[in-house]
Image 1 (cartoon, rainbow, N blue to C red):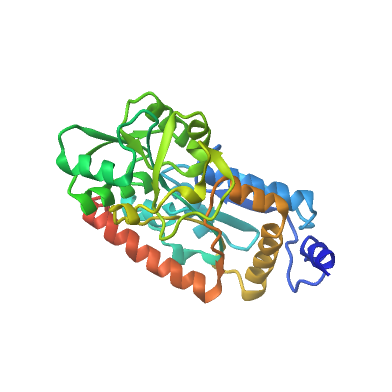
Image 2: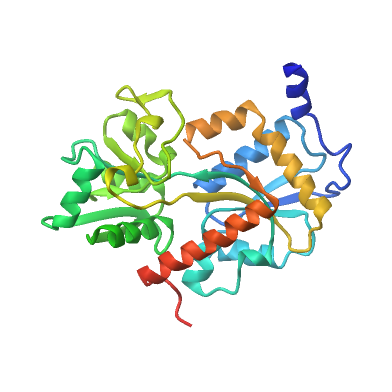
Length: 324
């Protein structure tokens, strides 16, 4: 029975679908090549191709200009559902920070694939062994704390501002081009800390160069396979449990053109349901220590509405909102 179910999970859905693409589907990535969103999009493309889950081709196109505004505006102008986009939290932050005329309501939600985690990292030789050590020193303000991150007024800096608001401490925020650069700067002790995603710093953790203090989620990560120093992702406590009351996870979701009807949205949801059932997806989730929350329909829209309000509050308090 299990074998039969697995076979069904990987069979093409188009034969029984009420709608299916009739031409190449463009998969827009509102971020640069090599980043987390790009990696996930190309992994999805590879799985779909490997298991022949679509009759038509799926082509990844990066539209990173203006912190992703280029990609979002293209999706806003899409005339039919042969165009989908993978979103991260810049679906909220980019229009808020830049004033670009775009909202997630200008495109059609398909589903949440996962949530990306953020971990508070310090150098492996840092005196801070726990979140409590870090918070105490930050509050005391006896030394200058530098937080390395990717981009300005985006997720890393938003978390940094939230830490400042929760503790009363102050950081000098230093933006870099990508998560790899951020990890390298922390290894070199050029910054005090980072809030890199797990996949962006795992190799340095294995090498003993970096130390994870806490994860910005409401619960520890579930992955129990040892990663470094005999510890697994599940051994990293939540930041809140260590006295740092900040929670933040990043969306990895799929949207299509606003004009898409229920049958077309259902097609894409069925497609990605098959993808997440594959061993390749499960391996990708564990390697990146993702939160595997999966939402669609009214639940996904409710999550988006709440997340938009949360980002508006965080960015307003931090002074990151575009002036009107």
